[in-house]
Amino acid sequence: MLLSWVISGPLGLARAQEAVPPQLRAGQVFESRFELPAEQQRLAARGQPVAVTHGQLRLALPQGFAAELSLPVLLISATSDPGYNSSRGLAALYEAVALDAGWAVLSVDAAPVARPEDEGVALRFALLEAALLSLREPWPALANSGLAFAGFSGGAKVSGSLAALFANQGARLLGLFQGGINEETLAATARLMPELPADFKRVPIVLAGGRTDPIATPVQHRRVESDLRDAGFKQVRLLIVGGGHVVDPRPLGEALAWFTALAAARASAR
Image (cartoon, rainbow, N blue to C red; front, top):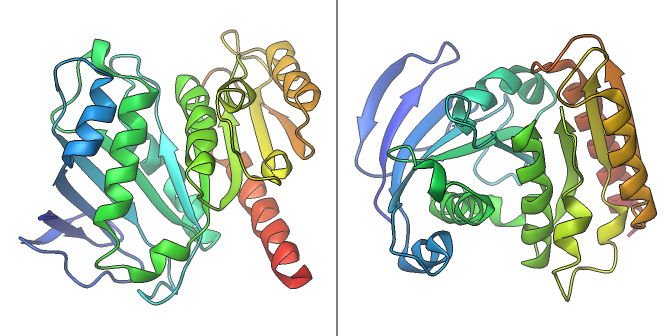
């Protein structure tokens, strides 16, 4: 898969562009435009004429990264609401916290921006699947990396559905972080998946809401928590923090620390 790469340093200043993937380096941010393979185009189109043929990914790598290491990867998705639908823009708000925790951060948008009627879970799934495939050449160990999903508001709902879809494809799911969420989507999507892994409902889930949020209220967050527990999910945490319906990266650090500790405990128990 042919890519055009823009390599950025810690300050996000572009310093080079190449036609093929360069060597990925620790502490850098990479942007690339890629073509959706035919299979992902059909998936994104959902039986309609193909409207999205390319994606733009952003990959932020922590210190300590090496291509032979299977570091955990956080996949961030934004809402589909016009003006707020850049997953790469949302990722930039969360990246510092995730990188400090030793996680790589991946976000993907349609290129050019998709029409509102083309936005949805199918497109986001196709874009992320294609982006992960495109990164296998410069980062071979990515094939063995665990994935966690994160989003805010409508992006939190999308992330819940994506977590179930990727688990259904055999991905190793490390966790789910949902900020500013007012509707449960993980269990709802999972009910459509016939052969999820036996331990799927042990995935750790963190819900984070603002104490004064009028769009996704604390009461709605508690309802989502209750719905997840009623659906059989064993490890759910609810964090209510100060603020309204705004992105707050702080709870993500607590979530990733929990995800990492649980993954380490599972690995040592094998």
